[in-house]
Image (cartoon, rainbow, N blue to C red; front, top):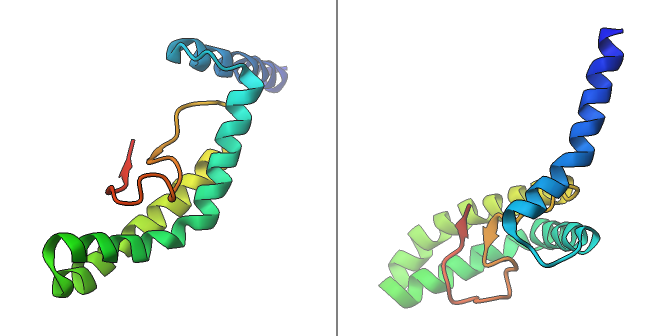
Length: 119
């Protein structure tokens, strides 16, 4: 009896939570459009996360010189590669709760000359 009540509660929560999140963001998109956009964004980020490595080497080299770009840019690129890939997979796994993309810029090819941020 307790188990069935808990399952009913979680199913109700699963049905209500996406609409609540959509209402909080004041999004003009429909639920299916927002959910599918989050899924596509997550898959794209998980698949193209490795591009963060050369991107960060290039940005650091342009900003602070070749030695800095090859060392610190490379290490930063590894961290951003892991971050974009993990957050992309997380966004793809939780696409039923449509929220804003976790990674900014949302896709690696957008604003290639800007540092990646999360949150």
